[in-house]
Length: 68
Image (tube, rainbow, N blue to C red; front, side, top):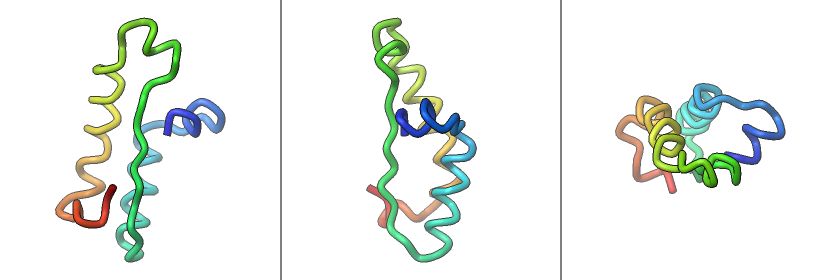
């Protein structure tokens, strides 16, 4: 996810929409989250990962069995 958000400008909400669509289509999802090197060096790891996870929660709902 951090590479997609950096390279393609994908925000957490767009990633969540993609996850929701994949799950609704019956696919299993590998949800990759993480900070950039700059965010890590700035001590923002927890803040960034929390924000990414928070955005995914509604998209995943009760489908945790289909998410890695």
